Amino acid sequence: MEKERDEMYLDIMLDVFRASSLLRRIGGGLAQQVGLKSAQQWMILGTILREEEVTLKELRLDTLVTKQTITGLVERLQNGEYLETFPDAEDRRITRARLTSKGKGTMRQIKPLCEESNRNSFSVLTDEELESLSSTLSKLVQHLNHEE
Image (tube, rainbow, N blue to C red):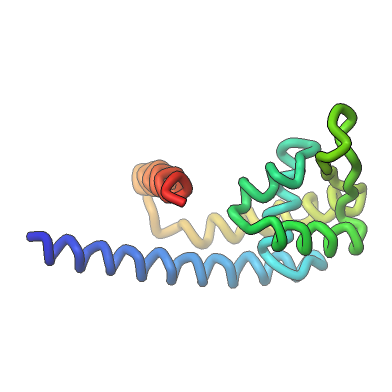
């Protein structure tokens, strides 16, 4: 029984890796259509869009990347004029980020592309399967994030 479970764990891990690679490839293609370099850049802009302005620490925690990686990504987006950074009004040690008009425009451009792509990618799943997948993946990400 334990051996069967271990094999199932391995199959799940491999499928998650495969799905992640395929979705990253699709997301990267969508990002490039609107002038971004990667799906990660799109993810950062999306996080900021939802919150209006965020700290770099919040961005790092949301995207699950290292401090060095988030710094490089933010600098490239800033150089591309997609976002701007500024010191926090209450604590000058904290850096905040917000979208520029170019960043907001880019997110408006990518939204319909994303919606169409998502409808296509997830069309093989029923509404019940989508809800189950969403809650299961959220639960797994939360658990794994606390293990670190």
